[in-house]
Image 1: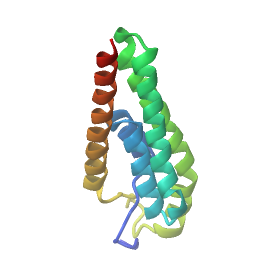
Image 2: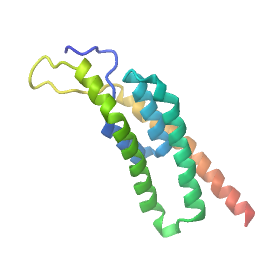
Image 3: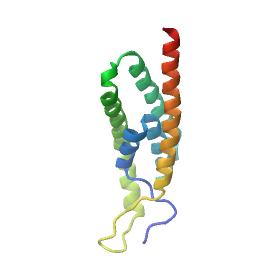
Length: 145
């Protein structure tokens, strides 16, 4: 393979999947990590912050506005929109990186990202943090009533 084997960034659509599965905080952190892997470290911290700010907004909406029976669809739609935004933001950077760094040895050789385990690990850690924040928000709401 003619690609530098050390690090092959994730596809942008994997950011959408991370957001749908693990939430907007995870999507922001994973997007930031991928930006660093793409050689654009200036976006790393801001993506993580934006992801967690969007998560706090989501929690505020869930706790105050969204009815109970609409929680699941709202969460999936909100998380997917966040992931889609991160995906669209990162796609031109990924395409430029891939054009410059991936030269297939054969016509049939396809690009394959590596370190998928890192994506899942970061996603699970962020999910745990987000669940702790969500449970704390619900606990504060219950103590006020």
